[in-house]
Amino acid sequence: MMTAGISGSYQPYAYTPGTGFSSAAQKQPGMAGASQAQPGADQNGTKAQGAQKGAGDDQKVKKGYKSSPAECQTCKERKYQDGSNESDVSFKAPGHIAPEASASTVMAHEKQHVANAYQKAAKNDGKVVSCSVSLHTAVCPECGTSYVSGGTTRSSISYSDESNPYQKNKKAQDAIRLTGANIDYAA
Image 1: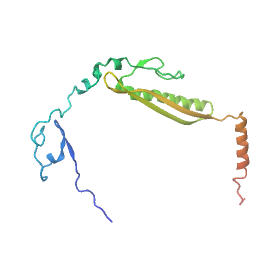
Image 2: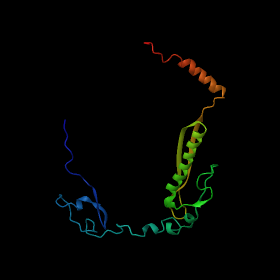
Image 3: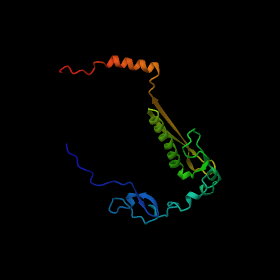
Image 4: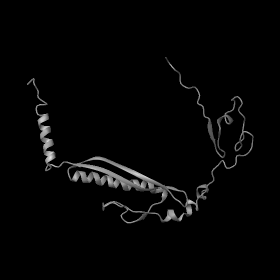
């Protein structure tokens, strides 16, 4: 059974500069029942109120909050500091990060912990079994801006310990079980 491709595409919403989003039926002439609307007007010919976002809308005070993101003291004074015992990572001393840059900066910091885990495993003849990074988010109580508030890196490293009697016993059991497993009987 052969099927043909879709001959036309249906766009229920089309963007019109200056008016926001409006129905596609208004913009495509020749469609049955389509009205010819003027730019900036809805089906009834009335101007749309607040359809276009103003340049300073992101600087206004959001409902339920004390200040706008541009003048928020809490965001300006927020400091980040590393709580681990690794001395070669960033933010050992408290430092400020802008809310817009917090995700990438915190992720880069957590990747330093991941790199340290791999270096530690390679130096001590170990193997990284698992490594995961979690970022934590929060919302500023003063201006309502969401930001990354911190991160957590969890790593698990496995080391082979030859002096451990249990490890020696395991090797002996493996030797018994695997002896003769790969014999070429044709030779």
